[in-house]
Image 1 (tube, rainbow, N blue to C red):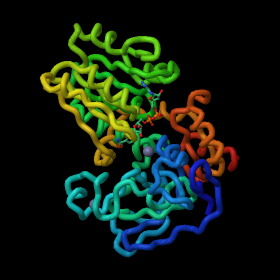
Image 2: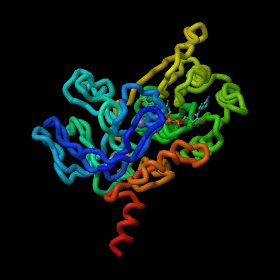
Image 3: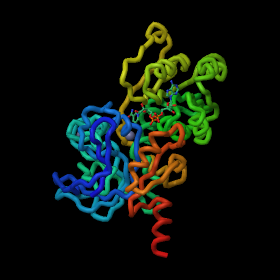
Image 4: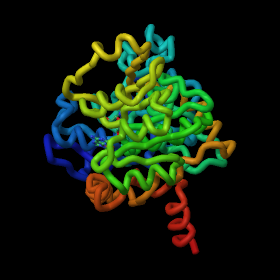
Length: 363
Ligand SMILES: NC(=O)c1ccc[n+]([C@@H]2O[C@H](COP(=O)([O-])OP(=O)(O)OC[C@H]3O[C@@H](n4cnc5c(N)ncnc54)[C@H](O)[C@@H]3O)[C@@H](O)[C@H]2O)c1
Ligand SMILES: [Zn+2]
Ligand SMILES: [Zn+2]
C-alpha cells in the first residue's frame, strides 16, 4: 500500500510499504477513506517529537471502512464505516475506566502516527478497535465527522468543559488556529455573552469572525488586555483559553481573566511559562491543563447529526490521498494558502468531492 512515511527531521515520502495485518485479537484493519493533517504532524516533521521514529506512517485523524477484525472484536465488522480517534483506549486500565483515554496505561493513548503507524495511508491497523473507533451514522459524510478525530473534542474537553463556560460568559480565546476556532464553535454550544478571539494574524481573525467570534483583537497592533478590560467594565473575561502553546500566550491568558475566572490551557508547551502567583493568589483563579481524551466524540457526533454543530468550515482544501505530499505543503504554508484543515480523499471517501468524482467516473 501507499503511505506518508516520516524519514527523520525534515524528511517525508509517499512510499510503498507493507500492508498492515492483524497483530492482536483486539485489532481491526481499516481502509482509509478520508484523512487529514494536524499541526502536530508538522511538529513531528521538525523533529520535535523524538519518540516518533523514522519509518513511522504519520496521521491520527481519519474515517474509513473496516476490512477485517481480530478474533476478540465484537462491536464492529467488515463493511462498517468508522471514525478513528487520535486517542486509542485499551478499555481496561484505571484511566480508561474513568474516561481518561488520553492517559491510557494499557498501550492506548495517542499512538497513531506517533508510536505506531498512523492514518495517512491506504490502510491502517487499528488497535483496541472495540473501544477506539466510532461508527458513523449513514446520513453523515466522512468530512462532516472527520474533525471529531482531534480538534473538536480537544477544544471542547480541554477548553470549554475544563473552563466551565456558562451562558452569558465572556470567553477570550488566545490563538485562532484550528484549535482556537474549534473552541469558538464548541463554546457557542453554551451561549456565551461574548467571544473574543486574539491572534497575530489577520487572516486567522477573519476566520474567527466566520466561526462566530464577536470581537477580534490583533495583539501585534493592539493591547489585548486593555481591550478586554474595556469590554468587561474593567473586570476581565470569565474564561480564557490558551490555544497557542508558548509562554507569552499562557501569561496573557492569566492576565485576561477576572477575579474568580478560569484559564483553560489547551496549547502544547515545549518551554516553561511563568506563573505569576504573586499576582494570582488573591484572585480566586482556576487554571486547568489537559490532553484530549475524546470521550466527547459520541456527544459531538449527535450534535453534528442534528444540525446543531457544523464543522464543514474547517475544510479549506481537498486533495486525493495520493497527493498527500502536496497537501502537506499547502497545510504547512497556512499563512499564504489560508489552509485551516486539508482533507485527503481516498478512492472511497464520502466527502462531497470524492462523490462528485465517482459520479463523473460512472457517468
Ligand atoms: N491539549 C491537547 O490535547 C491538544 C490537542 C491538539 C492540539 N493542541 C495544541 O493546541 C495548540 C493550537 O493548535 P493549532 O493546530 O490551532 O495551532 P496553529 O499553529 O495552527 O495555530 C496557532 C495560532 O496561534 C497564533 N499565535 C501564535 N503566536 C501568538 C501570539 N503570541 N499571540 C496570539 N496568537 C498567536 C498563530 O497565528 C496561529 O493562528 C498547539 O499548541 C497544539 O499543539 C493541544
Ligand atoms: Zn492532532
Ligand atoms: Zn487504558
